[in-house]
Image (cartoon, rainbow, N blue to C red):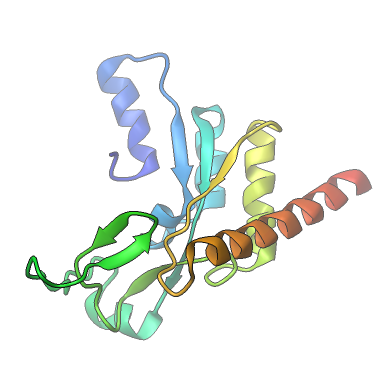
Length: 165
């Protein structure tokens, strides 16, 4: 995995590859304090697919431990892992974390996701956006419903703004 989506330029330079595309996952940029909308616009046609997954940065904890917070406790084999959704599990997440994966709308509002969809639309009006659900406070179906509703509202707002033009 590239450290950031911007590392794709270095990869292209080193390999001289001509068929590389970015699956842009907004959540990986949020916790690094990057702006996914700006990154989409910067990468342009290199973005070929996108993941809609939100992050909430917990400012007070991040101020003390930074977004590279490494206070994860290694669990014994007998201890239950944190469920990240589906079959994905992780060691114990810090109780007061610097950031958390959350359902769409719990980190960034619908207006933000409208602008994210707008940036993707500018690159490719047929761009696919996949929902990734790793909000441990919501069940599998509930998390997908929350995310889908935010994306549908964002898409409706985008469509309405495009019609006005």
